Length: 298
Image 1 (cartoon, one colour):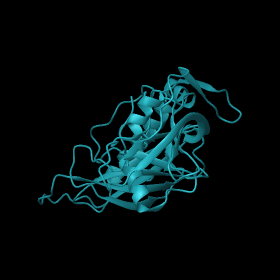
Image 2 (tube, helix red, strand yellow):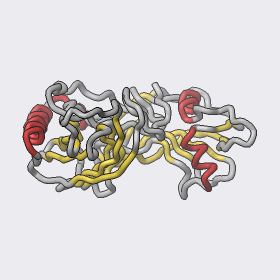
Image 3 (cartoon, one colour):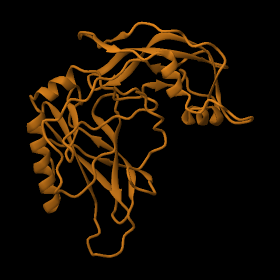
Image 4 (cartoon, helix red, strand yellow):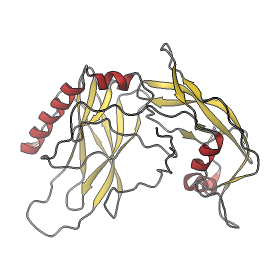
């Protein structure tokens, strides 16, 4: 199945989402601030112990799990605000023909590792996900697709950069193609530990990306309207990076507070590169999901 664009951040069962930026520092020990912080640090160690060496960790490391955009604009970027807006809104017009059915499977390749076979998605289904608003009104910004062909692209994954099958879209006015991954990710393995219910805080919304050197990850964290924002701290082990989401100066005085959550972009610095370690949410006990723009889901 194909997901719709994720450029617009959607609050989960909340209203009034706001995007802000912040950063967190890494360390070998998960720091705790007060009672809640100590309990969260204990939870992070429990999550790491459950995952490290588990069958779920092995399945994660042998699968294909994107950790970067699987839809990439033409090399050199889009020209002007109108084209950028059309791309983010998914406004496309097709002036060429889509290729017919091709092979059922394609290969995901990592340098120095065995290739992985994964199901392919056809051009028709992929284009429907890319062009979520195909009927552009007169004067409305849009991008015109004049051709589509099979090719490859590089995608950041939980195992490092991979080369994957892709659909290459020729756009009117551009010499380089827009690329969209055409291979389905692997299903996330069943976690060896369940979600915790007795700790404050909200689970991480999603993974935004990993720094080129792997020494930082950026996530979208949630926090309430009556606190001073979200903070995310890491617990690093040889097999995992467990992220501890919490809030600063939570209001506990009983005063009225609106029922909403706000989104905050947080960059978490690490002691060493992520590599193939699993990036986990301490509250859910699950890998932090990457929800790319018009990406493919199993």
